[in-house]
Length: 634
Image 1 (cartoon, rainbow, N blue to C red):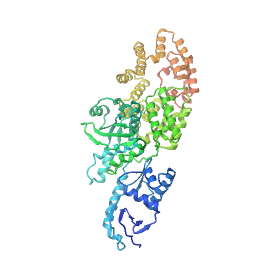
Image 2 (tube, rainbow, N blue to C red):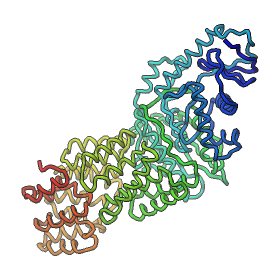
Image 3 (cartoon, one colour):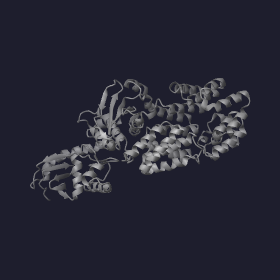
């Protein structure tokens, strides 16, 4: 057996020993050949093992910062992994932080002035046994750890998710059973909108966008209840106590923080607060960074807690490299999110412009493609455009997004929705929504859209249960409340629909659409006058109020035909069909249903459950149309 060389410092990890002078790597006393640069990179990673070492830092140090050598860095790490026999997952020694860098995660023992050629490696068996025991423990713990990393936003997530459990962790003597119990315990958190303390309201897109990304990534943790965006944004710029928020949202903790921008310096401060007593569980301690170095903040944030916790707090979801390194593209994406979340047609167009600009900067930016896919999907399904015009664009960008990153739930939702528009294959659509929920079990939109499938089939109890799940993670959401109201209308339960509609009105009294649902519910109860009183408060929907009055006054056919001849009517044939059905015009209703089918209008999947069509159900034309859209008549 060859002798170990003299060394100023020896590092022992697992079955390996690394000597820094001369530069040699040994495995159980046998020398392992490792070229000079991979050796230096390995030594540097070990030396800086308390943090993530970014790609840029390694390129700067070992390749003079030339980005052309990024592939060389990847190959160098591959050589190191091969030498360490670290090619399996999860890794034992070198962990890749996608979109970030690398970190040495093995337990290391340092020996100064190590022994010379007469040292017998078996003499250190006790010490080595101890190291092996530590490594085994670390590896078993890593089986239960989920590391969330990417740009600044995802780094904060890592800190929060891991810190969330750190304050509950006992001393270092915690055994494996304790760790498993900790990982399995259900917890809950609400990420409040970061306060924009930059002094410029134009930067709201940045603080809001970071908040949303935090929510999206935290929600990937299986055993963590995360409140969705629409509910937490109800508290934006409001002076509400932690206890009040905890009671309204039913969460144990809240994350609150702020964004500051001074000159070129960016600072994000966050803290985790217990909603029972308002106490601060944990607070970040981060240095300011130049805006151009926004992604470098991730290492400082993540490593504050990662080094102290080795528990995997969710299921085995492989990390995905989805985030750009380009700060300009990232900020354009956040601006797109800002407008997309105020889902009017004009705001969606603004959002798309920002997403497109982000793709001009970075053509393979998966999140920008996902943003466009979901935006065009909303345009299509909310009847903002001529049926069939936005769906192809949504399909294109959804597929592009998933080519870059197959972990994006929004892309699966858009793909399932628009890919099945032509054939109304709800079974296939459901498979895509299930895939989205597999990627993110807490995705509120996926739950709501899947509930729509059950609703269209007439599976009302199942749809209700799905909406209740969505309400649990988004209790104050207008969209969730509206879905529940619509469910009860289709279920022929107008009293329950009115109950839900009143809850919406209490929070959205200035939203015209809040008055539309109770109007329909009172029509189901044959209370036309009360329905009209609600319609009076929704001038944007005047045409439907006119139709109600026309039916009361006996000249409904003229009013509905006028609507059918309008530009809006030609664009939305399904609504024209329901209007003709409401006034009892059977032939006209089928005429416009056929137009809706020819245009493959998304609303047609409501054919089986629409109350206005109840008197058509014995008509062979109705049976035939149900068959063509893959819905049975039973």
